[in-house]
Each structure stands twice: as C-alpha cells, then as structure tokens.
Image (cartoon, rainbow, N blue to C red; front, top):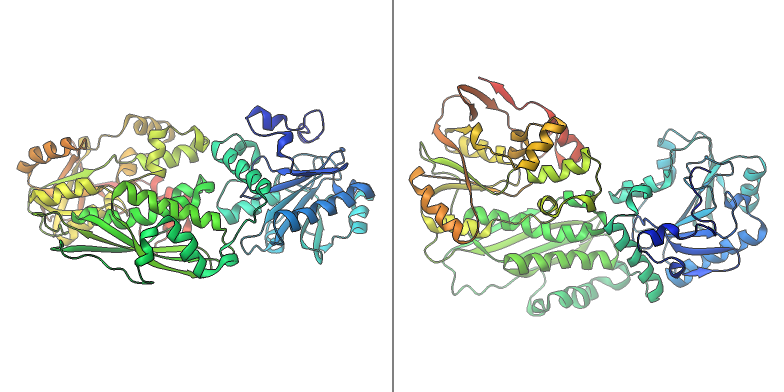
Length: 569
C-alpha cells in the first residue's frame, strides 16, 4: 500500500485519537459494509468520507453488497444530511496499489457540498496527467476497470452525471488539490490534520451532521431574512436604519472624515481558510479605519456593501458579520448600515465616517517643511515575517508564535496614535501605509516637492525578522518598507519629537524617526548608509501592475521582494 491503511479495523480512527478527535463517535452512518465519517482534514465544512469496512482497493473492486451499501450511504447524505443540496462525490480508483493518485489504497469516496461553480472536466483536461476520454461511470463499467487492472478517477454530481477517466499516473490527492484551488486553502491532509484550524473544521462538520439541521445557504432564506434574521441578530441597532442609507447625529460634529475602500481577499485567509470570512469582516473595517487614522479622526462607524453568491453558506456570512462586529467593538464606532446583494463571488466595499476631537484638526498629505523628520508608527516588516515563515520555512499556521501571527491575522488601525498626531498641531503630513511604507515616502516626497532621506541605521528590525532574513537571503530593509502592516508615516518638526514621544508613551505606544525631508534634489527617496547613498525603487503595492497581489497573487509580489531595490547613487 502507498501508506499505512488507517481505514482497516485494526488501525481505524487511530489518527483521530492521536490528536484528540472523536473516533468511533464520529461515524454518522453505517451498515454492515460501509461507514460515513468527516474527513480528518476537511477542505470545507461538510466534507465527509464513505469508507468500506472490508479492505478492498476501490469501489470498482467491491462486491455487489458493498456497492449497494455505497448507494445507500449516498442517498442518506443527499436526503438526510444535506437535505437535497448539490453534492460532489469523487474517488481515486486505485485498483492497482499506488495508482490513480490515491494515498490510501482502501476504498473511500469523498463527499463535498458544492457551493461554487467547479469545472471538473476542465481541471482534469488541463492537468496534463489524463489522456483518456471520460466515460459514464456505471457499475458495470467500473467493474471492468477492476477486471482489467485499470486505475481510474471517478466523480458524480447526480444519478445522470457519473463519470470516470481511466488513468495511469496521477499526483497524490489530485481531486483534493482541485477543491483546494477553488477555496484558496491547502490540500495535503498529511500536513493539515494536526492543525488547530483543521480540528475545529472537523468538529464543525461533525456537529452539523449530528444536529440534524440543514447547512443553510443564503439562497435558502432570501434577502429579507438575511437582513431581519441574520444582520439584525448581530447588529440590533440597525432595525431603525433604512436600506442603503444611514443617519448620524450631527449635533457634536464640527468636521467629519469619510473614507471608502473595497476589501481584497485577506492574506491571512490563504493560510487559515477556515476563518476566511472572519478575516474579510475585520479587514473591511481595518482598511477604512486606517485611512481615518492617518487623517487624525476617530470612527463614528462604517457602512458596508456586500455582494455574495446565492450558494454561499449562511455560516460563512455569519462569520463575516462576527469579524465586523468584533472590529467595531475593539476599535470604536459601529456598523451604520449598508446593503446586501447577490452576484458572482464574494466582495465587500466599506465607507467609514469619523469625527475629530475638540481642538484637533485634519492632517493632510501636504505641508512638509525642509528638515522635517520622517517617522513611522508600527512594527515594520512583521507582517512579512509571518507570511514568509509560513512560505519559506513550511511551518504550519498553528506553529507560528502568537506575536508574529497577530500581524497577519489581527493588524489594527492606528487610531489612538492618529488622534494624538491630529491634536498635537505639529504634524505636517501623514499617510497610512496600506500600499507600503515605500509608497508613502514616494507620494509624500512628490506631493511636497521634497526628497526624503532615510537613514539606514534608523531601520532597526525586530530580532526575529533580522534572523529570518539572514537565514533566507532577504533584505530586511525591503521587508520593512513593504506593505502589510497598516502603519502610519508622518512628518513633523524635529523639536516636536520629544513631546510627541511623551504623549505616545502615555497610551503605551511609540514611533520611530527614520529620516529627514530635504528640498528635492534628484531622487525622491534616498537611503543613506554611512557615506554611501542609494536610490530606492518604488516597490509598493500598485494597482494594474505586473506584481499586483490583487491580480497575480502573493507569490508574484514576493518575487518583487527578492529583487534588489537599492541602487548606488
């Protein structure tokens, strides 16, 4: 066999017990031939396996009794567990050991609720591993595969849509990889089953099956109940609001701040897909609140317009609302209202509203004077330490220390710090670094017709970041100037630094001086390292750019981070 048979009676559920998961108690259906249990590393909530009790290599090798039990198990899942929802069944038919991409040569069929449009045939054909035509997957045709020692891959979406492809070689877990690509998650169960996130997903899948409740989708309840039964349950104060509008008590307002931004897929969800929509909720608030922090405003609240597929699970939408609610509770303000509509995929756009403290004023991006110092608020480069440790060191998400992980999963808008800067009256310009510190430096330099000189010795990395960069051949200065940390960049007179430091210390925060603004002389942004000077390229996150994370993904931007960004002048 390709690996130890964990499905045979002597070893059955040994992996579950070794990591504290339910064993025999996780069986939601069984007869004399098969049993049904959650996959030990579910790709999504509702991922089950139908497994034979007797050791046979595939269902094509099974006798008539086992095959009849398979059909009964499918019917139970369709009618009782999923209440006639659309399901995808698939099997790696390893009629010969170590074949068809099967990892365990013991007949088992995966069951996945279909919550997205997925082109199975397109995936198979473009994989470059399958050269046969698909055939109807009848009992007789599969039996012929066993008789002729012909491995196969099989999938089914309904009685009339049962197909198989004869295959020679396939990569291990071929079908799992297909699903994972759609979910932006990891597919390899051998690495995932021990993680805390996967254990939680296993338990949610089991709880769903045992509760007897339908795995609801938004299309099952409709817009009216999404608003009245779901949104109002989390945000009861919205019952008095009106659709697409919001009312704000303006009696205490002198000047208001507004910000609007769509939310891209949070990077954290690439490593922790089980909490994908929770991160969407937090990030949709963060993106807009961070812009207000740079202006010096404090949040009154936010409006959110959300587009969702009809087939999106209700539990995923509730997870999104939880992220929004917890962010507002933590950072201030509240959900003021917004809109929901159906469409292709998931998208959210926010518009935040803020106010200024009495005596404070709006901070813009112009007004820098020569010899103003350039300062940053936040721990530079820690976001990339989290991302690259997961990528380069291949550690599991649960193995990342909590401090480093927080920069990936729970970045915060620098609202309190922005309010201090606004109230001080000595700050000449400020930006939030959503696109990167280097992007801020370029924009501030160009808008104010200045050159900004960064002192290399002032870019002091966290010791963990420095160690990682030495080991993995990254320049820590590049990571510190890149995007991801939601820091602030501001300028002020050198004489104001001491008093600002005192005010920051009163709230347990700090900032760092990293350079100085001078009248423009050639390069907008320059790195000074002793007697040597270097121009720094603008490698910030740019829209419609060849390295855009939004279009080309994370790996493409990491490729940019590998490049030398500093050229001698």
